[in-house]
Image (cartoon, rainbow over all chains, first blue to last red; front, side, top):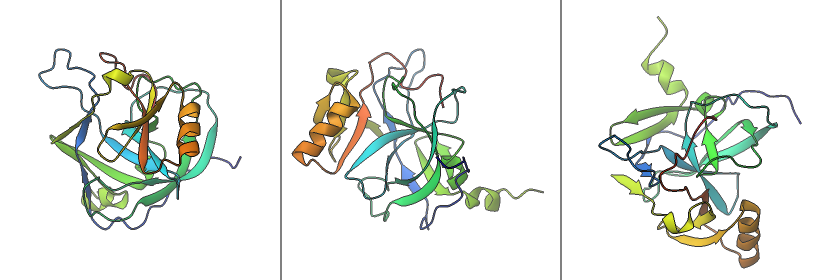
Length: 139
Length: 62
């Protein structure tokens, strides 16, 4: 296994990709709205199937194997947004899978090294990581 | 617009969704599902574990 190195590249994302939120049927608790998740489809390059992946920066630390891998995020379904966008970064393997749903969590290390994610009231957007500092330069 | 997935009938199982978010194949484990997809040559699906209604999808890990 190669040593961990943060993801540093993604190419080809010329315009923001806009996604709808996903309702997994988790209910709404005391909220007037159901729980909505930011979900994208990811895969290894040339794979015939994708995985539903939740973008979530929260969490805890765990002692798990870490691998460096190339993954692709697929454009929003039903749009002509273009080809998948690849990035390379750390992948933590959790076995057995402890979640109630989904297969992949995209978090701070890896995904957010490559992408800027903007959460809005009725959708979210993916843009290159460099967009954030271009929009909000360090004074 | 919100994408709504009604997977209550498959709660806790691994499912492969087609382009219309309908369950194309399902299995008890991810390994079993991958075997089915490979054996039947199913392509263009998206995989997830169907959540159990009323329980959070994501908790404690990130």
